[in-house]
Length: 378
Image (cartoon, rainbow, N blue to C red; front, side):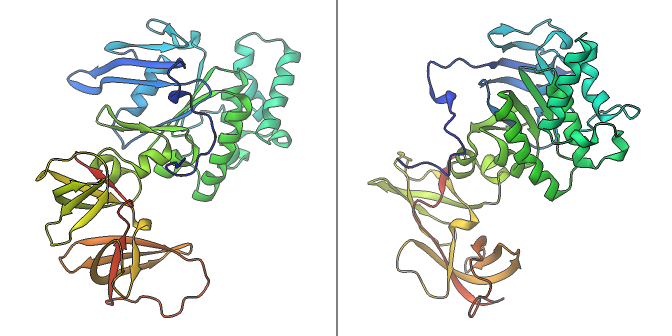
């Protein structure tokens, strides 16, 4: 059985019609005066899922998280947690913890005191607090930093202290609002995998808000791509990347080439597109598009092959190597087709040296397979 991309784990309760969602947003609308931050939004999150709300600034993702935490109330609609409505339940009575981007550590307290703070507020016995704090610090690999103050730690270490404090109370649900935004690129990538391991080890449900596509793609079981207070698409990372449902999602997730065209005909699971610049394309798609309708083919740069001679099969067009960027693991090209369209292509640098590499201003061919991209009609 073919799959869209590699599967990180077999966990997929959303595919089971009998599975009950752990969190349900049911027709949620949130207004701030005349401004509509969330509009008639519905989505389900399942227990032990790592779920990402992904979108640009101002799309409503943090507002959605704050309503779940109890810091905001929906204007209309209902939020359910484990089957129970949350309307009117104050934040401190919800089995939810929220980790903020700023980490919000107490500067005058040691690491262990920061982690223990919420447990003391709940009145847990001193011996139990000591044991729980030791467990949490071991979990985030900070045992030898227990006596230090936050200002004596690196950004990544402070992030892990905040995480340990957030999970110390064993909440059923952990909400993370841009938790890795303050870290540098390398540390952020390392911490992403630490978060994934921690989430699965503790068996918690994580919902993370981020505008970083790579972050969402790396950590999530599923992603909700948001735009202007609505969900544009929900799917696994592979689904939203390989099969976007709109031009917006295709363009927002990663890099993409959009070939606009008119449907010239359909037959035997193939759609023929007539491009405005004379570049006719065949696409593997068994949907019944009306002849003459306007659609777009979304194809990722890595699905495009470059060559000096016209390929014998697939969709092909000639052009000129306009820009070349060597990135180490890949080389990115911008090719100006004869009709004027700029196309991005990426090649993996499998070897250290390349014989006769493609150079600037060279006449080359781009090509891609009929099943290399997705047809979009919106």
